[in-house]
Length: 305
Image (cartoon, rainbow, N blue to C red; front, top):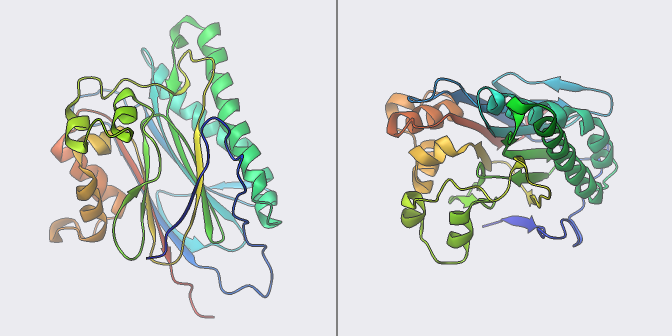
């Protein structure tokens, strides 16, 4: 099984050497295809949806927004996908998740230029700057407007350049990696008290799912926290690999092995649906207590010229 994952330190993100992104060249082999789908659902209980998701392509000149479903080549542009779950009173949770995703597009062309020149180390500073910028924007709004006090958001982001996916994360949304050969790996750390206990071996998945403090967040963007320490890393991918970005509504409705089953071996009634829709609708059917959002990305073999 070929799994190449670089996981960078929380306290000193990207302090270790990073894998180099391949330089784009006319002599490079055909670029693989990328297929994606995204869906969000308010759930059965909430009246407003505080989740948001984003899909864009980026090159050195512009950012173009993607539809909820699509397929393209990973050649002239990079692809960025993200999920954010907002929190706060009244409508501020919805506002927070939208701010988090809107701010992403401001720095994307700069990141593409770094990728195109094979400067993988540039992603360290870029993602750190991106998360810090969103964090300070939410803090500023929370301090300036009473209705925005305590407003915050999770953010899980995947940046696809040729052969490498770079990710940034904070909060309790998740990024999963499903390699071609089988299995499922959670790439991100849940920034919750229960997630910390589970990583330390004090809780198993069943105990974590039923723990009374499972929703107590230790880190988010904004939320009145002065300092943040996001989780960053990179994965080397190849055709046949899949990635899932999802909010905690999906996790509430589906165990990890169920997520893999819905992606790889769906039941006949839903097999023809897009992967993100299968995940979201199944999670809502099983639970639906929270807003539920998923983006699923699949890397496909390049098309012969």
